Structure formats: structure tokens, C-alpha cells
Image 1 (cartoon, rainbow, N blue to C red):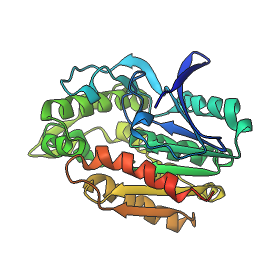
Image 2 (image 1 turned 90 degrees about the vertical axis):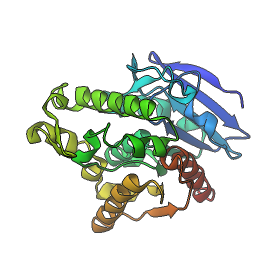
Image 3 (image 1 turned 30 degrees about the horizontal axis):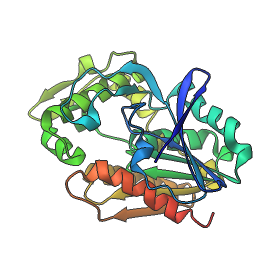
Length: 281
């Protein structure tokens, strides 16, 4: 499917249209934006949708090379942190008047961003789709090499690519959340991870599970995860419990997807399921 590109205050956005649009979906990509390979290329778009994928990257290339084309020439993600959430608001300002409904959808890191942005601006969205997004993670996530086999299986990639991809991701988060100071404090001894707790607390503040609030009840919320994507599912279970505690109605789907590439293919399937769920919106 062909797509068009526009510029929003110097940031690129990619647009796909299907039929006469009455729904706008702003898609937040997983970690690693690539202008020539937009995430929305992987999505089967239903009739009646305008899908916009803004460049939510930091504008800097990732620090690794991969033989896997899906992970080559990527740009560092912003986690839609701080002022980077503004790119979503600019898309809405530009296109909201052309449609009847505005939906925010995010996969993996993009789902993290979607939860945090929707928690801050719930009145902007009729619905939010969160696919395969970690709502939090524990210290074991910092042991990338020790978890390389699992990470490679989740992404359906080779170990070297998995190590490089997730290491780059952690380095970017360190720069965003703790001024590049946390990773130098990480120590791994027999798989046990220790680090500077005060610096780590700055990361925890940005975990979606610590951002969601009762205002999310103003929007229709859809959350999904592949059952085989074990670590993401466990964090989603905690998110599900938190949302129930604060009385935020939501659709939560745990589905049986692929075992190999459980996270990578699960986030694509989750977006599809979300659009299907919102078909009657």
C-alpha cells in the first residue's frame, strides 16, 4: 500500500488512507523508527481509516549494525517522553477535524508512550490501543547478555541483533531518564542485578503502571498481549490489576499467538485486534 509523507514542525509523519476516512489512528512505533520502513506497513488497515505514524525518534541513528533487515538503519526512540509527546498532539491538531473519531495506538515502546500520553491527555482520544507494551520491568531486564536467548526468541532474530537492539534501547532510556548515569552503576553477579536505586527511581516514575490514573476512564481502552510473550504479559497482568483498582474500564485480551517472535509478531496482531474491537466505535 502506498503512503504519503508530510512535515510537522520539522518532524516527518507517514500517512496511509483506506476508503472514506471517519477514524484517525495515530500509530506510535516500537523502538527504532525507520522512515523507509514504517511500522504501519505491517498493519492490515480496515476501510474508513486514516493512519498517521509520526516520527517519534530522537533523530539519531541506533549504535549498531544488523544483518536482519528489520533492525538495520533504525533511529533511536524517544519513548514519547517529555516534549516528544507533542508530536502526537500536532497530528491531532492537523487532522482531527477531518474525522469523527481519534484513536491512539502504540506497539511495544509505542504502547508505553500511548499509555503515558493518554493518561496525560485523555480528553484528546476516543480510544487507545496498547499492544505488547511493557507497563514496567524489573532489574533483570538490565542483564541483556544473560537474557539474549530469550530476547532473540521474542524478536525472532539472532542473538547478536537482540543484544545490540536492547542494549541500544537501555542506553537511550538512560540518557532520557537518568542523564546517562544509571547504566554505569549496573553490576551483575550470578544473574543478580544491582544498581543505583535513586537513579532507577527516575526510570520507575516513567513506567506506565505509575502513570495511569482514573482519568483514563474518559476514553475506551484496549490492551492486548501474546500469551507466549511471557515477560510482557506478566507486566500487563499487573497493569490490568492496577486499572481495576482505580476503576478504569478496559478490554484486556491475552491471546495465543506465535511462540517464535512472540513479542514482534504479537505487537502486530495486537494492533489488528484493537482495530477490530473498535470497529463499532
